Image (tube, rainbow, N blue to C red; front, side):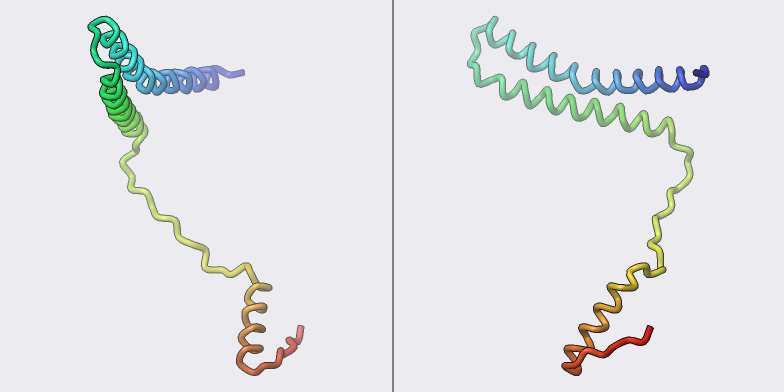
Length: 115
């Protein structure tokens, strides 16, 4: 195993760890902290909904900003080209079927093709 493959695995684990941290930490902080505050201060238990929503918003914005930063690190500045469909037609049998059906509808008789 060469040294470059070990570094690529380490980078992959590091990125996965950062994404997991960006997803889990706001949820744990807001939901766990909100639950603790509700129990400690005797607030209404329905306030947990607000803590969950704030945790989800923090999770999405944090993950989005991290992924945007990660993608900008690997951006080479070139514009991507759009994918152009292939002009060649590979469904020959399907075209003959459609042609045969048009001939049947038009003339009422199926024409045989010479092959």
